[in-house]
Length: 212
Image (tube, rainbow, N blue to C red; front, top):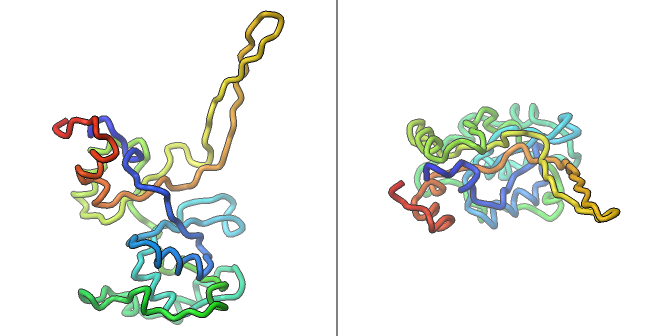
């Protein structure tokens, strides 16, 4: 475990939402997964470049969908949502009393509408670099009593690969390296308690000695 870093155990593929997301996309994600938290990403035209906005909890997304605070236009309208919501709407429900995706009734027309997730997003989540030691990430996770720990790229914005192409010219080998730059997401993944479990780590890396 000492030789592993945070990105090595991130379970994928990463499922994230845009700040202003289509209702149908959110409904489908909640229907098909049991994830408790989802990264929210600010994207153009609302920002100059993609950046991590924060994390939206499943329970808060359900409340937002139940309230049907939607828009036909893909635009920010978080202030309107804040004025129409009360803090108790998002209070933690008792065991077994929380909203479920099966409780929601959303029409086909509403599925094509948009909702602004910024008002319910935790915009200051704990984050670590993808190269942080997994052992250190586990200590941080336990000491702070976290449920989610965001793993972000060490070099945000671009991903570099350096394939080499070999050309034969006049009996001499010419090596030409080209740098391909592609946009990287502003988040690599989210670590939860499950990702630190020995069973999960050994399932990914069975050759590792669990005592080291």
